[in-house]
Amino acid sequence: SQQGEEDPQALSIQEGENATMNCSYKTSINNLQWYRQNSGRGLVHLILIRSNEREKHSGRLRVTLDTSKKSSSLLITASRAADTASYFCATANSGGSNYKLTFGKGTLLTVNP
Amino acid sequence: GAGVSQTPSNKVTEKGKYVELRCDPISGHTALYWYRQSLGQGPEFLIYFQGTGAADDSGLPNDRFFAVRPEGSVSTLKIQRTERGDSAVYLCASSLDKGVKQFFGPGTRLTVL
Image (cartoon, rainbow over all chains, first blue to last red):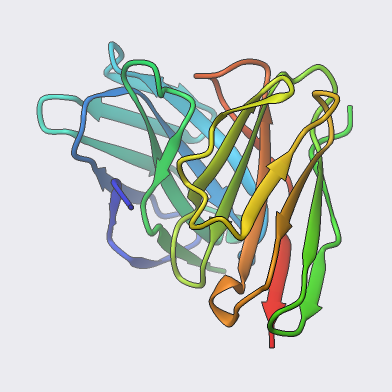
């Protein structure tokens, strides 16, 4: 079953603009991770944020986590055509099953040159 | 170093046949996972290995699916009596331990005719 729900399902922007994607989930989590996928194949890990963290940065990426609202957002600043991909959030539950990632359906980001 | 590799990259088979999908994890990673991704969906968890043993196989859809990891490294996902509904991309991932970021392979696209 899918836990995370990304919003929007699709996003189209111009190069240089910022892109924001949101993720909502339902259960208590140990951590939340964002992945990128090109052409429906392998996923690339972008960033992991733990349940006791509120914000994390990595290069042009900024992730926030609000555990009270069970939501997260991924911001990509100064987007490039190469950022075009599907982006997924994945949650790892708290407790003993923190190895099992539950993915949403993803946001398809298109960055137009 | 080398990432997670999966073979074959594509597999076309006929309904009712048996298939094996192989995963070579990153060297030294004790945790290994299989996920399945259908078109337009996020990956769904199938099974998790810690070392040689399947610690959680709760995601396997039925008893036609089986996976092994006999020496704690390479893993094989086996599907008996394939059905058209088994068509999907099968993704393998590995991690140093559970609860940390997972590194995904490029996937095997299985098509059952």
